[in-house]
Amino acid sequence: MYRGLIFGIALVAGTAGMSASASAFDFSFQWGNIPKCTTGRPGRVPNPVFKLRQVPKGTATIRFDMKDLAVPTYAHGGGTVKYSGRNTIGAGAFKYASPCPPGGRHTYQWTAVAKDKSGKKLATATARRKYP
Image 1: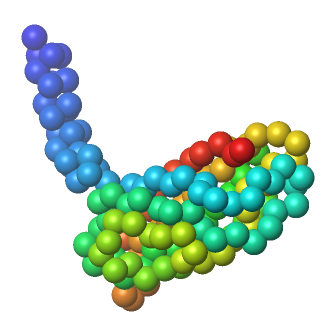
Image 2: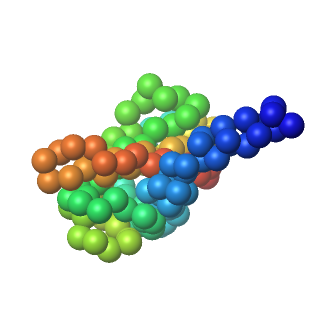
């Protein structure tokens, strides 16, 4: 009985701060109308449309960076956008080196870092998608 009571108390204590993370900063994306590329030689293309959720209060900018999870050392780049309070970052806010897996299909990950006006990091989110 005591073991169950102690476990229950630990479980409640451990989940007390979870309500904040249940509505954490998140986003999704679609590749959009970029040229198909499987040569391993990426081109410069406009960013995809990003759909944002639960952007932290006080966010002034969001930095987006993409990497190929199969070749994480290659820098595809990204860009920083001013956050206007809208939940969508449209295509063309910045340019980056397109996904372009050599002869196959890779998974790519975008990382978004929300920062306040002083440059302090407020939250980080990631989203993954296969290409092509």
